[in-house]
Length: 354
Image 1 (cartoon, helix red, strand yellow):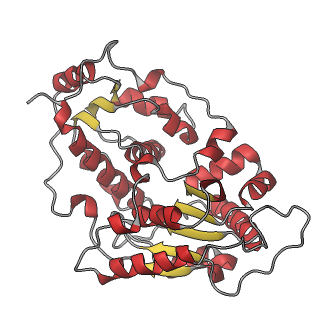
Image 2 (cartoon, one colour; image 1 turned 90 degrees about the horizontal axis):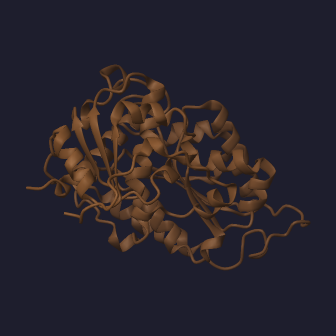
Image 3 (cartoon, helix red, strand yellow; image 1 turned 135 degrees about the vertical axis):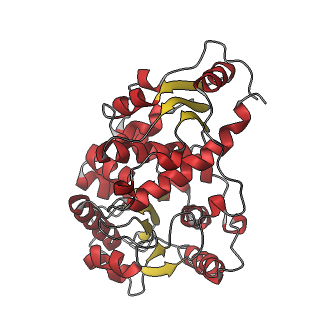
C-alpha cells in the first residue's frame, strides 16, 4: 500500500487543464502503458494462429520502412513535386475485437520502425482530430508530412464528418510518402461479435482502401484471459480512507465527475490526470445518457493508457451502461471501457488495507 498522502487527495473536479498545440504534437507517441512493449513481449494465444502471424507480418512491414523517406529523403521537401504513390500498400489495418492486443501490436510497430521518434507519430483517432483542430488542416499536413509512419489507434467511424476529415488528411499524407497503420471502432448499428470487419473499414475510408493491407487478429479479450473476476466495489468509507492514505490519489464523487467532464474538452482528459497516482470514486452508478457515456469512455481510455488504478464504491463497472447502450451503435466503445475499467479496478485492489 502506498504511503500516506501529505495534503490529502486531490479532486479531478477541481482541475481545468489547458493544453497547448505543441503538447498535442509532442505527445503523439505510444502512451505510458505501451512504452516498453515490443513484438517479442506480445503473448500470442496458442489457439489463435492469426496472432502469431500478425507479429511476423508487422515485423516485416516495420523493416520495410527503413531507408530514405518515400518522398525522396528524410527531410521535408516543401517545394518539391508530389512523389508518386507507391504501388504496394503502405498501410496495415489491424482487424480484430477488443482486448486481442491490437494496441500492443500497433505500439510495437511504432517502436520497431527504424526511424527517430520525431519521424513517427502515434495517437488515437480523437487525438488526431484534436490536432487538426488545434493546428488547422494545412499545418497538420506539414507537421506530419515528413514522417515515416503514422499509427492511428481506434479509428472512429461513427462520425461521418470526422471520418471524411481524417480520410482527407491521410490521403495528403500518403501522397507525401507517409506509411499508415490503424485499428478501428464499430459503425453505428454494427452489432455482432464486437469487431469491425475489414471490408467495412475499407469501404468507409473509400479512396484510401488501396493503401491498407487488412490483417485479421482473432481471439478473446486478453485482459480477462485466465484472470479472476474484477473485485466487487468497495464501500464509500474504504475508498475515502484509501484516497487519504495514497500519495497522489484523487477523490471524487462519480456524479460530480461526470458533470465536470462535460465542461472539459476530451482532448484535455489526459492532462486532467497529470500527476495522479490513483483515481478514487464514490457513489458510482449507471451513466444517465449517451453523451455522458461517450465522455466516460474517453476518460477510461486515458486512465488505461497511463496505468492509473481506479478504486470505486457503488455499482460494478459492468453496470455502468444500460442494455440499450450496450446494444446500440457505440457498443464496442462501451465494452472496451468496461474491460479497461475492470482491469484498472483489479490494479487498485491493493490500495485497500486488508
